[in-house]
Image 1 (tube, each protein chain N blue to C red):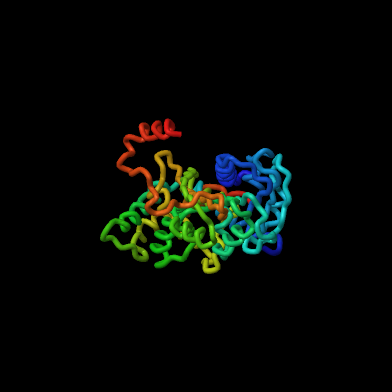
Image 2: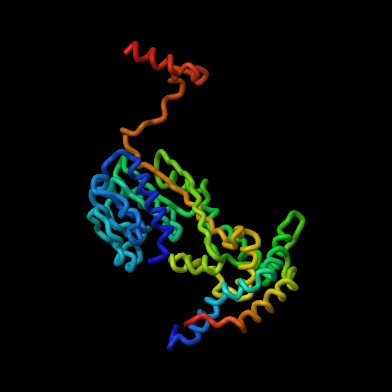
Amino acid sequence: MKFDYLKEEVGSRIADRVYDIARKFSLALDVGCGRGYIAQHLNKETVGKFFQVDIAENALKNTLEMEIPTVSVLADEEFLPFRENTFDLVVSSLSLHWVNDLPRALEQIHYVLKPDGVFIGAMFGGDTLYELRCSLQLAETEREGGFSPHVSPFTAVNDLGHLLGRAGFNTLTVDTDEIQVNYPGMFELMEDLQGMGESNCAWNRKALLHRDTMLAAAAVYREMYGNEDGSVPATYQIYYMIGWKYHDSQAQPAERGSATVSFGELGKINNLMSQEKKSQ
Amino acid sequence: MSGNGAVWGRVRGRLRAFPERLAACRAEAAAYGRCVQASTAPGGRLTKDLCVQEFEALRSCFAAAAKTTPRGGL
């Protein structure tokens, strides 16, 4: 399966973030797991049992090899068939951009998490494939007088924070990464996107992309974005988000006015800390 | 896709040959690209057929390349 490279890479980066949390998760869930790109990088010490959920039966039938015991479940992200407070960990890598009702899917994830459980997700960001989007837009305008969407709108980073907050998550962190892949040309890029299963699927898409427009777009792409060696870059912007389900044990913001030192004394922090040690 | 897929196969074959034929027309493609890019500068406006001359040059080069290069397989 030579088109999996992007999902493999992001899957391993999510696994890194799971390792960063110094905990063992006995029960984990992967929403939109595909062939199991995250689970294959994790070990039995970190995750006890992994539930793999995807809406595509073929993906579940072609699962990659992994050492953690797994259960595959065919389900829709918006209707997770699990009870409240089930999982210690929920992960999701590059599949949420296909969900119709994203707020609901995030609420579902929050629901099935145990208190003090954590959700680690990766989603495509707004800059993803901007070169392709712009080239098609410009070419279609010049050739046909107008344009229709050919690249899905991706979530903006502010919206991500709001969505997670609305779903009930606490202590959010969102960080972003850019993976740039070079292709011989626009057609090769589109072929790979098709191979990855990422062809445009919007309801309002135009069913036909004129050959002339494709030719024009390929020319614009190379001229505006091309590299020195003739190849063209495609940007995949990835947002990694981490959200926690509330639990009493989690650190709370301190009360206003309860500070015992001021920021102005930051330069003397070594003295202050050794003083505290002496007094203990 | 119904039947034996002959039509779809031909379309696919034409599409697969695109990169090779486009490579034969680097100069024309670059000229068209520059024309479109110029319209994105501040004060420029991209309208239909703004770069029609450059595109026609590209299209004829492309058609000529299609005659000389073999079509990609089904």
